[in-house]
Length: 102
Image (cartoon, rainbow, N blue to C red; front, side, top):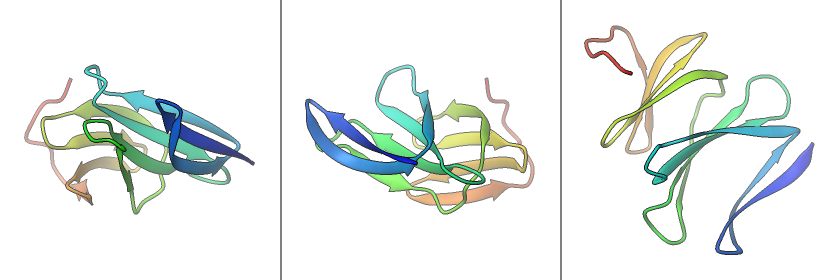
């Protein structure tokens, strides 16, 4: 794989080792989830751009995302393995959805 360096204003704030990357951007531009593909399921990293340097949070589970739904203080993600919530640094598998995300 290669090394990808995440930068903002020309200053590096994170480094990913991967063959390729993909990302899901919040429409406001405040947050982004990056999938770093090397072998197997990708590593997931949340970048929050409201601070300088940006906040970098690595998720504990590797998975390929099929959907990302941005909420005020959390992100809800869909994968082949089910639905997950990432909130304040904690990844939780959701057992039933009481909300509709779109």
